[in-house]
Length: 198
Image 1 (cartoon, rainbow, N blue to C red):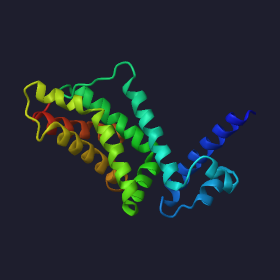
Image 2: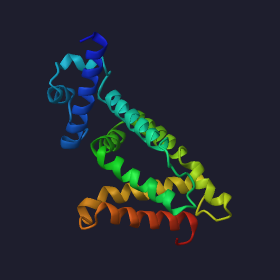
Image 3: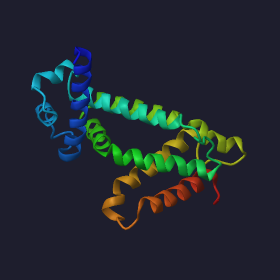
Image 4: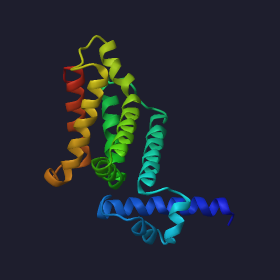
């Protein structure tokens, strides 16, 4: 195996291990050696790829953003939130990504609690993700409907609502399945943004 391939394989193994360990132990309780042990790599190999745990977490965030961008580029992507199906599509994708990356998402939140620098990184990441759908929300006001707040605030409120609910869903509303949660959140977000039912 070539050196570049081996390095890429090690980096991927470290990322995968970090996601598992963060999900199991939490970011704050995880040490670099926990990640390397889970990955089956020598402790020193970590620093060939990442300067520290925060740098690894930032790499995982970049991977999540890239995955989100791929979804947005898929054929059939709807980008007008006056269309309830566009809202449904985005809610469904957010639920899927949230479930797949829950360990990373919780790690991001925990890291932001203890590091102002990382909190700023997380804020920039969140702003970029919301900017990606800002035009979807702007379409609502362009259609003559009154948003609850300026588009930038409205999109942040919608994201916050969905994100917060998903954080409590399995603990408090376990009887609701994915389809039901998608329906509920779609109706709530659509009504909140458009001021009407569909």
